[in-house]
Length: 85
Picture 1 (tube, rainbow, N blue to C red):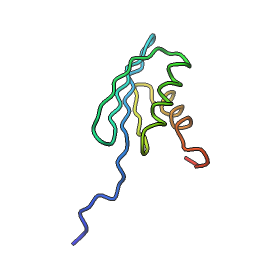
Picture 2: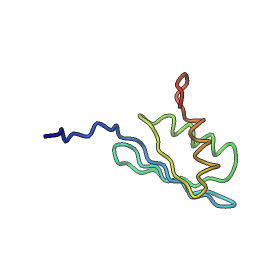
Picture 3: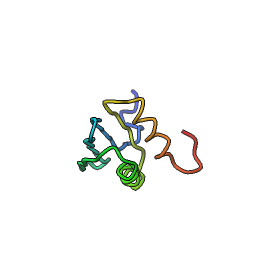
């Protein structure tokens, strides 16, 4: 019989609702805690979000209403220094 344990590490889930003047962000951490943010389309707010995500243990999986522009940026900025993603 196959081993039923899940070998996939848990990851932090990030949902970003992109709008013209502001974005709504929901983050669910690996322990189930939820964080909500409202942010404008500015470099300062994106930097704060990226700093928050970098401070979380484990990997982040992000989805957004504009996947090409947002998740690519997060994938680059949230990668671990020295690793290849």
